[in-house]
Image (cartoon, rainbow, N blue to C red):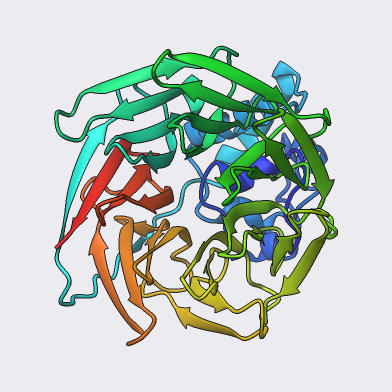
Length: 412
C-alpha cells in the first residue's frame, strides 16, 4: 500500500483512513465504474490506492470537506470536477459504522472536563498545555488559535494574520510564545500571547505547503515535519533561518515528531513502515524499518529510556522501538484491528493514546511494566483525537476534532 503525495495528504490527515479494503473492488486497487471515476483516478490514485477511500468512508459533507482541504493546499479542481468527485465518492464510499468501543476496567481513576471551542466548526486539531496552566488549541478550519482558562472556562481566540493558514500543530517556547504550523499556507507562525501579534516564517521551498507537527529541542531549535512535501524542517528562532531536507523514502509522509534526551529528533513515516531520525547538526536522515511491512506509524511518543512508542494506525497496534538495539515489540490495541490508534503521549513512562475509529473514541492507558491496558470511553464521543499531551501537573489534554471540543483529563 502506498500513501500520498500532495493530493492524498488530506485523505490521510483530515480524518480516519485505513489499509483495510471496503470491498473486493477496492482491494484490487480499482475504482467502481460510474460518473466521476475519471476525476478521482486523476486526482487521487496517482499517489495512493483505492483502499484508503473505503474505511470508514464519509458522508457527502465529509467528502466535500476533504475536497475543499485538497484545494486549500494547492490542488486545482474545476467546479464541475468538484461536483463530479463529490457525487462519485459519496455514492461509492459512504460513511461506515464504527466498531463499538471495548472498555477495559482497571485500578486507575480519572475524570474528563470538556469545553466546546468558541468558534463553531473551528476544528481543533492539536492541543497544547502551557506552563501557566492554560490550554491552547489550533482551530484549523477557521484559521485561529484558542486559549482556554480551565479555572474559569473562559476562551480567547486569536485569528491568524494570514487568512486561511490552517493552523495544525502547536508548541511553546520558554518565553511563552505559541508556535504553530500553517498547514494550508506553507509557513511557521509565532504568536505572542501578551500582545496578540503574529510573526510568520515562510518555508523556503514552494512545494513545502503543508508543515505538520512542530517540536522544540533542548537548545530552542524548532523541528517540524512537512507531510505532503516529504520534508523535515529546522527553524532557528534567533536568526529566523529555515532549512528543509527531503526524506530519503519517497512518499514517506513524515508525521509525528519527538526529540530524544540527546537532542535528536525522531519522526514517524506514516506512508511506510518506518521510524526515522535526523542529525541535528548535519540534518542527515536515518531510517529504521519496523518488523511488519503493513505498519503505518502515525504519531509517536518517547519514554525516559528514549524508547519510541508509536500508534500503528493501519493495523490497530501499539508498538515500541528501541533505535539503539533495533528491538521492536507490538501489542494489539483493545479496540481491534480497525480501531485506528492515533494521538499518543507519555506521562511518567505510562503510555496514553486514543482509538479513533471506535464508537465512542477511547482513551487507552498502557503500563509497559505490567503490559496491561485500561480503557475509558471519551464522554463527548471524541470525534477523532488527533493529538494529546501531558499537563504540568500530571493530567492530559486532548483535542476532540469532530466533536469541536478540548478535554482535560485529571488522573486520580
